[in-house]
Image (cartoon, rainbow, N blue to C red):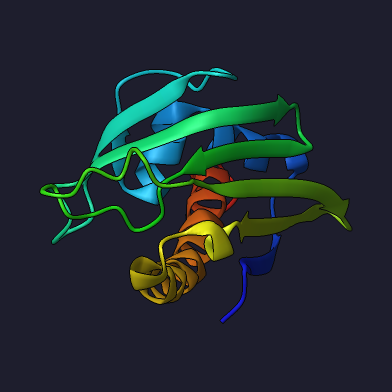
Length: 157
């Protein structure tokens, strides 16, 4: 196991479009499958209800760490905190970073989640494994989201 998860994906959408998909709370909610209560603001906690089938009981919480327009969006959270009977608040959080770079006529999106080594030993491996799988799916979700948005704007369909 590693302290970090890293995923890279080439998206056929301009950086500005990918940035909006990441940082507009309504768009983020569509592809990430969470209904957020309000906009992302640096230093503030974002809260919402997970809409992914089987996880609707989970309240999603993340603290916005950084928003460097069209370059870096960073959040911290308690990874794989899905048991409503467990209080995760005393545990360390992991850091999620979405980095955007222009790549040809699209965007290279790099996702990194780090800090798993600081989690309690009994949760560390499962949180890493579940999030590794989860981020693989989320990268496909954002690819589809920004691709569909382009199609809806008249570039296809």
